[in-house]
Length: 431
Figure 1: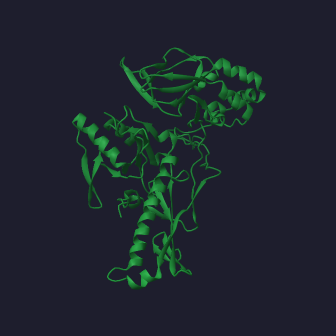
Figure 2: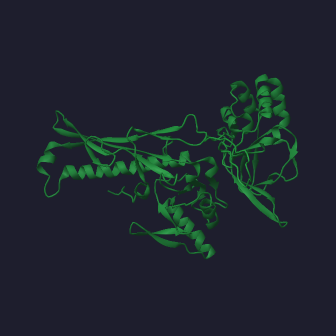
Figure 3: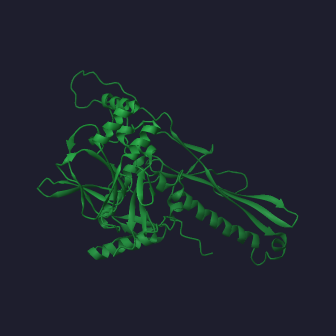
């Protein structure tokens, strides 16, 4: 069977028993700061922002007037740019919000010693200049295009005209201006008030740990199939090899392959779809370079594994060769794997490759004790054949075909946002 892969992700994930069929993740309360990504549609070459997606902007967080949002979306102007173009210059008047529909932009600021320093990258769905809609000001940095692409812009004057037209929008803006700043830590979580460095009988602050009021619950997903074997095969061709057992073995292999694919790609619980937006990085130049891997590595404590498509590992190796850098090898379960800074790079062919030959690389911390990524399953189920997988006899039909229901139950959970990071838009065919 050619479809069997190493399935490293299933091997290294710590599997947590979920007795009730659901796993609740109780996190400290985090305030929504509107740093999500915006989604666009393309019709006849014209890019338009989806009106409801505008609520990802901090100013419009919680705004729910569909008519006003639709009017706002219609006032954005499309601007195509080439690599090297300056979208916004440091010190220039900041009078518009910029939404990145496609392409890659670099935020460049003044360095401490007179040169330039890179402040970050902007990719598809990112936005910048939200403050420009509230009050006049200047850009604190330069936004320069790294690749060709498209942005949508909305000026402050157009926004104020719509605020005068829609009373709900005006009221929302005024409420946003007057809302008190809620105490929070650098991670956006509700602050725990503490006192330190005091002397004598100082009054100590009272506090409590505020949790999310609606914590997320992960329900176990299922992959199933019905194995059908004719009784004649089971009766006559079971020596020297048990044909039913071999049919079952290959069916289970296919289910486990689908299980790993779902853990990576499923929109509800998959790692790629559920990675926190602040933990998503853009590659600096396209292919995965040592600089990109270092950026990914430094975003979390105790990174235990990188996970990449084999072609991405090869692309990373080419970039290392260009620089004269040679990654080390480490041994994982008796197999020698490529590593970067001592962190193994696990090959996983379930990571998707786009038509433009781009993919993603993940970095993760594992385990409940480490507040990392965990796999979820339930053991002890009826007719269990493997942990979290059972084979149930469904009877013999009128055609003498034996039916077995083969089911695998699983899911995955990211306990805190920095447990998983993703390097996006990694080019595989870069020259």
